[in-house]
Length: 320
Ligand code: NDP
Image 1 (cartoon, rainbow, N blue to C red):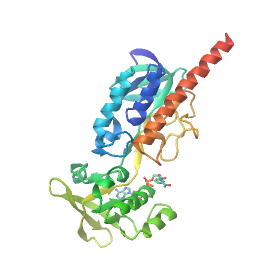
Image 2 (image 1 turned 45 degrees about the vertical axis):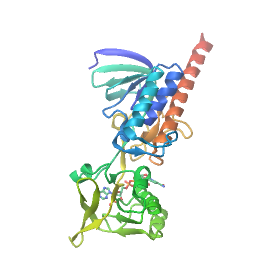
Image 3 (image 1 turned 60 degrees about the horizontal axis):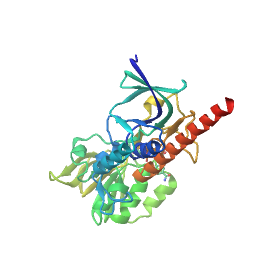
Image 4 (image 1 turned 90 degrees about the horizontal axis):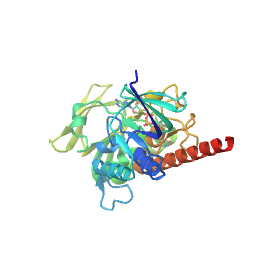
């Protein structure tokens, strides 16, 4: 299987804000981090347009530009950033073992996992076509661009309910498209939605198509799955909030996860159930899911890794 073995002190898997921030801190602590970017260097933010809520950018910045800045900053302190995909791990072995692109074996004293999560999409071609031009999977990121306008949001879980109420504060009207005749969200969240006058919940409704003028979204075509009636709702924005999938498939069986696949960390830290393996960013956070919170936990992971290595070194000195 493996042709080549390389040993590193600190291996970072994934290259979103969590991974790059971990890299900046780990490099400055002289852990000589090696990062594997995954197939989408920069992560979810490379799919967004303007980022206006990351502190330090008073005029905003595009997602791809911000990730480029983070990459350069991580490189400036000596992070070895490599394009590659971690295809397998062995967290029983000491040091921890990771296989990259099915061929290269890396052993690592510490591993920081920042593989993120992927927003689920409906899978319509028109949704892809207008992604970034009226279609978004993040109300907190993009809601601002629809101030005073009409938008629709699809989904009926806690995220959709929360994002609908967030959008309702900015937008004139929010149509909430629920595919069944009931919500999945908690009672408290449903209560909040029901008590927001400018949210209109439309039950038994499936999205057929996002309609646009070639540049921007102008409406959403929906189907009532009880009556089979089709209709168009004029909207400028269309938000998808049907859940996220954490990118944790390769860690199944090695690391503790919740029932939806998010990695579990020891509260107040980034420690997983495996010594020397840390998790940061959306891969362990289904709740906040912001670039800035991911970056914060990336910093925590690097500090946790550094302290873990220092404690190990102390142990060795005590024994000898
Ligand atoms: P969920 O999986 O809970 O909900 C997804 C929703 O999207 C469901 O209502 C589902 O419908 C709907 N959906 C899925 N596919 C489609 C589709 N193709 N067309 C239309 N609708 C679709 O995801 P969430 O992101 O909402 O929540 C994930 C987890 O995070 C949950 O455990 C949640 O409780 C938690 N969370 C908690 C928050 C809080 O406490 N404040 C805030 C946000 C999330 P259906 O119901 O018919 O299956």
